[in-house]
Length: 77
Image (cartoon, rainbow, N blue to C red):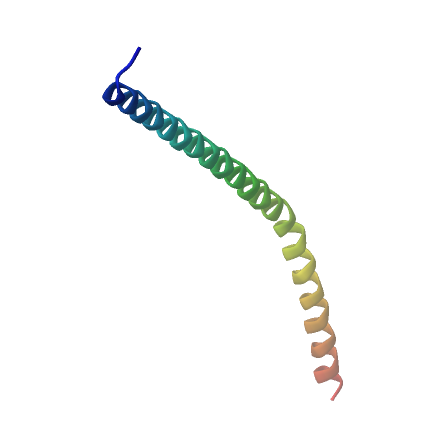
């Protein structure tokens, strides 16, 4: 049987353990979210890199056609 001081010490010790466990769980959850966001960012970057080249080529072709039409118009004047 514990005396009053022993009970307070045991409660205090259990409380510290609980707080440490909660803090550890919170850090682990935070790391999981950071990993998820990093993975999402990586997928977005991969998608942008894959789509950038065709988009750049298409834009260049449209601008080239527009410039060719302008040259014809100015040459006709």
